[in-house]
Image 1 (cartoon, rainbow, N blue to C red):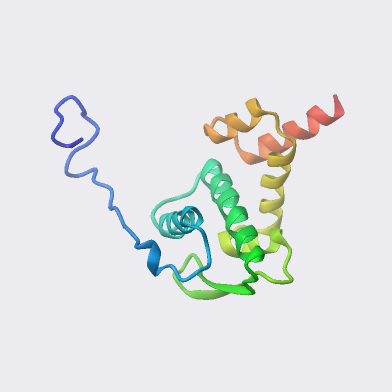
Image 2 (image 1 turned 120 degrees about the vertical axis):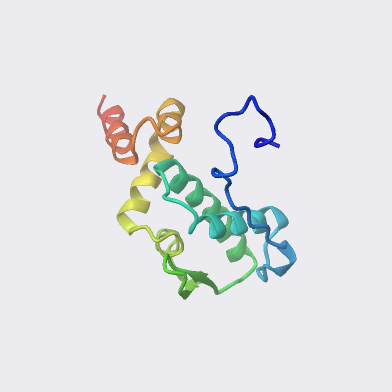
Length: 150
């Protein structure tokens, strides 16, 4: 529809974005449909593009909900994929959420910690500045430290 619309100049046959549709019934995890959809989105989009800090933050928030539900349902581990498409085991039971997030997202524990610090301490305007890609997570983290001192 966007390509057919002459008023939309940015979309043409050369700017098509591939779309992958996953059947939620094929995701063999004991998750609600909502969390299965989040899981499908974050595991599919991972290979598609370079992630901004806003993307990483959103992915972490989705993973936290997924991890919480998996823990409530007694899941000990799941199979994931690293950035090279290689299968890896993601341990859930007995692991700290930060370690699971690092393993699932491919971020370092320190980077996960920075996002958590911003999530826990940033006011809505600061968080939105990061989510709108106006500032990096590093700048947002520094700003949360400044606010505490003040």
